[in-house]
Image (cartoon, rainbow, N blue to C red):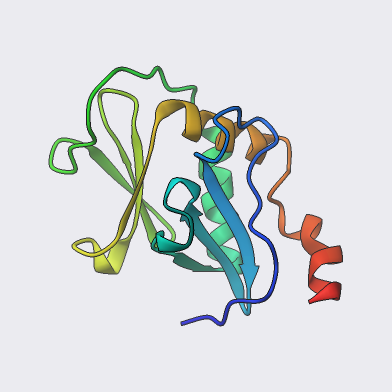
Length: 139
């Protein structure tokens, strides 16, 4: 398990959903991902730095999702292994993240708009590890 640093969570500048988005921050040895809708109650998914880069590359390549009403159904989603994570895509546009080796545990679920904003931020380099240097120096 990685140790969290005292660094604020970051969301994409493309997020127009207020406080409902994918959030990321560095941790000792890697990065952490959470769901801002749940705030401090959100499960946190830790990723080593190299695996976080792989996750970002997956998000960058992700096509825009069209959102439809409904819930995320884990059993019907198409799951893809991306580093230590599994990314699940539902037919209604929702996207979920979970640790691959703990698939029965915590899961983060995002609407199509939330995922699209994160993916666009990833394409713009907003979460690239080198963009965190000022925060890491201050920590």
